[in-house]
Length: 317
Image 1 (cartoon, rainbow, N blue to C red):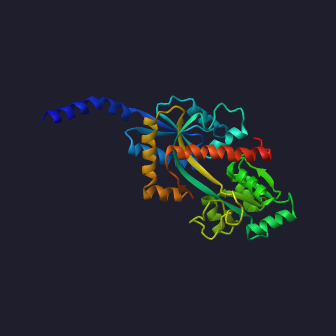
Image 2 (tube, one colour):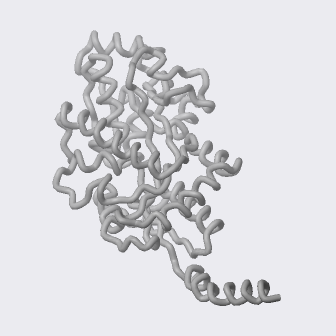
């Protein structure tokens, strides 16, 4: 009886704290406008957290300045677990493009969990007389500077993938930067753009309709969505693994007692078949792992793309 009473008293003592936790609202900041892939993944993560934690969870889209506005807001937020950031791979790239940023992607954030990664597909317009990466490289070498590739902006994953291919293959391609995906897609389909690296899931339908020709994917292994396409790595381009990725971060100094429950919740969701299916629909593969896995990923990507940006002389528009 005394043990039972002690249990009841302990539960009553904990009740106010539980109520406070349930009443708090956690914000998952997506540093881009609604509707994009980062926003879609952010909403998946927010829903997963709300299902597994005694918290109200909302998504806050704070777009602007290529993601820098929303990211800075999280960097400056109190490390209380109420404000988190769903970042994309651009998080590790921006400081190399904008050296005067007020935040650092590593030291100003606490890694929580890596979520997913999406490969790119290398596509060409059907008018280009190439059916393989080897033929594309040969044509580019025969016509230095005559072939162009597109991206939706300086320093985007599409741009950096093209720059890396130039370096690895020893070819000269002209980069054409667009502001937004609508215009670049129109020019790619019209043949004004020769080739492009784009999200695999976004280009798959275009390939199936014959609007573009797929040559390779940039993941470490072939994609289940396009198993007939080789990876650039298996074609002999070592170091050509290029993926966009998404991760959950908090402000620096977020204590471990806040980080670990969040990490467990994200990983528990990623282990469900539903999560794998939803992410596969975006052409993404599940990542997961401990907080250190995301911290290592951000550090590696910061160093890797920083070198490419410096050596290619890439400057923001």
